[in-house]
Each structure stands twice: as C-alpha cells, then as structure tokens.
Length: 286
Image (cartoon, rainbow, N blue to C red):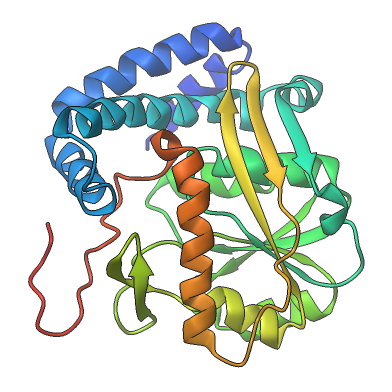
C-alpha cells in the first residue's frame, strides 16, 4: 500500500457510509472476477467446510464474501481517519460487555470476520482498559498505517509475534486485555491438528496456552457488518477453560468458531488458505 493510497483512504473518511459501502460493493464484485487465485481459495474452503451445499450456493456466498471484504477494507477510511464521535455512532458494542470490564486479564478470542478491526476499535473506544495485541510487520506504508489505525483509540500496545510469550503473559497478569486472532494457518511448527468443519486443520493452541499462563479468562467477540456500521457482540467467558489438555481446548475453540461462522458464513475470512498445512502424508488441498 502506497502513501497515495493512504491519502485516498483519508479522503474517503468523511463520505456518507452508504456511498463508501457502494464503492466497496463495486470493488468487491470486480475483485471476484479479477482475483482468480483468491476466488479459487475461497471456493475450495467452502467446498471443504460446506460439502452439503450446492456449487451455486457456494459461488453466491463467495461473491458476497468478496463484497464484504472490499467494504470492510474501505470502512477503515472512516474507522481510522473519521471523527471519533462519528466512529462511535457506527460501532455498537453489545452482549456481555461487563466481561471486558471485570478485573483480571482477558484473552479476547476475535475470529477473522471482516469486522475484526472495527471490533477492536469498538472495544478500545468504549471500554476503558489497557490492552495489547499481537502484530506481524507489514510491507511499506501499510505497516505504519495499520499500526496507527489499531492504536487510534484507548491504550493499545502492539507486541510483535517474534517477541515470544513473556511480554504477553506479563500483560495478562497485569490485568490487560489481549485482542487475539488465532484462527489462521501459521504452519505445522506452531500448530496442532484438530478438526475444523470435520477437516484436520493446523491450529495454533495460543488461546488455551496464553489463558493458562496469563491466568486469564477467555471472552469471545464476534463483529458483524451492518447497514449502519458494525455490531460487536461480546459472548460470556468460556466456563472451565482452559483445562489441562491444550489439544482438547484448541479443538473446543474450533467448535465454538464453527458455530459463530454458521451464524454468519458470508463475512468470514475465506480468502485465506486455512487448510494449507496438511498432516504428514496428505496432499495439498489447494
């Protein structure tokens, strides 16, 4: 992302939301046609996770998915550059919000729905707690732009993925919030294979591991794009979690995630190669 692209996002910030969403709709439809490799990845993921659907149903959902992807990307214009009061009006925080205000460390399980950045902003703007998040360096001006956007509201400390566990565990034991998005394929070295929609899937066991080491609760948060902005729903903390079995805990995390996705399949991050890493002896799925 170039600095001129960042300037363009700033220019989009004051536009009415219906216009920004209309631009995102057009961009998403165009990307569905032009981004052939990502379209194939999304459709492969949907075939694996929803084999009972027809191909026409999967294609229709993938097309909507690309639209949501583009709309969420353009929404970062007003989310990260718009007036704070306008941002607050567009972000609804609902559900068990008091879970985030209770004393003690909290691992926020925030799956990769397209509203993930809006969810982080909603929490940091409306819940007065110190927080941290894991951060992977991005290329060029994109790194500076994303870092500044995710630190715009509240007191947020980005922690590099390469920094190890110590700073994260320390933050949790100090009573901070950790905004964690662990549902990505990070390779076999950091992962265990547990089912995800019935497919053995490389999944990082970071949620139970950090909850145990940081003596923290796990609170799921799911963010949905709406006509007026976003709704971030805070779910109750998982009871009796974690256990002494991190593999079982990671499998349970995926089962919870499946239910969240089934309620909102068109806004999940299907363009990622979620099944790229395979168990020994299995062929690639892509």
